[in-house]
Length: 109
Length: 111
Image (tube, rainbow over all chains, first blue to last red; front, top):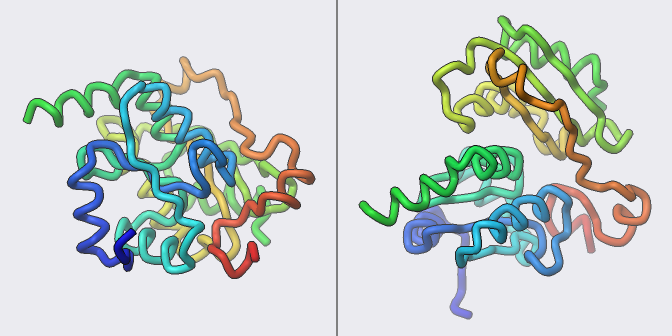
């Protein structure tokens, strides 16, 4: 893997070039936190491909991502480049159908 | 360490017209909290801006004292339909905490 330095430019590019991105502790297969697990399960339930970023692999990750996002906790879910929130909001928006709508709307733009 | 009472007070400062504030200490460790707030302030707001009201207020304490916050920001109408269920991220806290490391902070702590 090429070097990733968690700069605002790199993070912005990452979320803008992938329609669904999850920053989480661990991986969807091996989540290291219950909240991250919940967010991963919500994204899996969408049955759409998503990019997950394990922020435990680099000590720079959490402070960099949290400052860039102006959001203090992990996990974080991005849809078409936009932060929707953590696992609580992801679940809420999935249950209301808003998450699915947001994904589809971004595809048609 | 923030107590449940302290959290309730801070939430009420952040959302002065809150009709209902419920705080649950998720692990007993006074650092993982579930917060349910019901307020007309949230009407017409999307989920993230609702949370930002609280997160902005609590920012100085995250992640130093508050490691995890699970938030439900509801309008009065939504509250009538909400079952009040609380998500517990670490159901078997002791075993999971020991082997997995539940901290919000990165590597240096888990290594």
